Length: 132
Image 1 (cartoon, rainbow, N blue to C red):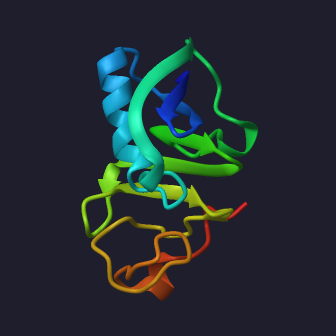
Image 2: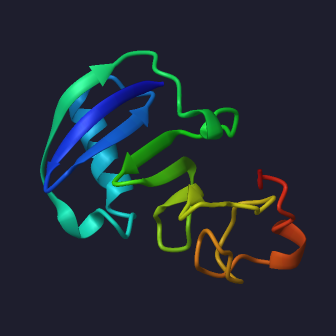
């Protein structure tokens, strides 16, 4: 992955992605940041301040098949945007200190502590296999 330090006008965040094109990085950053409670209302004009090619994810997030990671003000959110929530947002593997424990990622039905919405057949699919 590549790590970027992004100034979003009202703060600074670290953002990991496989992308290296600045326009795509900023587009992906905006998509991920828009789903985060602690940053979405603070988004202004975004610009890349620094880039680090081939940067490892923070230790607790390695090996979870993530596509993006966003850290800001102590919050750490890990994404797999190959999947989406019921409202089209990228799937969060880790948020608010909790790991997604869903064995399958599907249409929302029963509340999961990470996703805060309904996951079909929650008791069967949310088997806490990702919890560390």
